[in-house]
Amino acid sequence: MAKRDDRIITSVYLTKEMCSQIDKMADRGHISRNEQIRRYIEKGLAVEGYSQDIDLIAGIIRQEVQAVYHIEDIRAVVEQQANRIAKMHMKSGKVDAAAFFLLVKVLMNVAHEGTEEQFDQMLSEAVALGVDYMQKKDFQINSFLADSGSLRRIADKL
Image: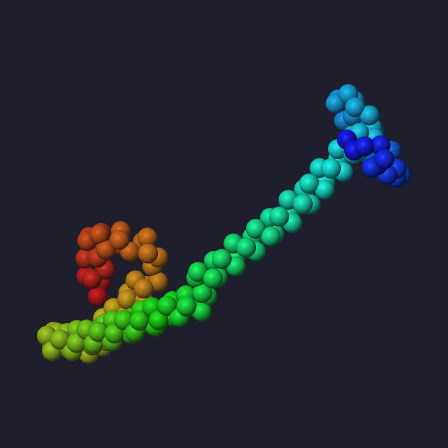
């Protein structure tokens, strides 16, 4: 506690409910109401000081991270990799499209048994199945491809 000449007397207005709660807390700690109020004020000041310290520390950490990891450098690397992946994806799409049309051409040359209308129906069903396959979630793909019986039934429907 501060020396007598270092203290300032001040008035604080409390509601009856607040005063009652402070009195209960003071009674539990065997101290006066004034001492309980001083302790609450000290805690409040300490908490405010801690929050200012936390803001200061967070600012220092942010500053150091930005000094080591320049945001623009990170953005450039990520953008470069994203462009690389997009180009690879485009190449894969071109190969997939070529394989699709090659398969259609092979089927047209091999499948002389059916009519043109049957072939068109088979082709549109195959495209619909391809769209359905592409809409599956990642976790569904493995089980879908592992079920050879189901794949065979789907292929037989074509």
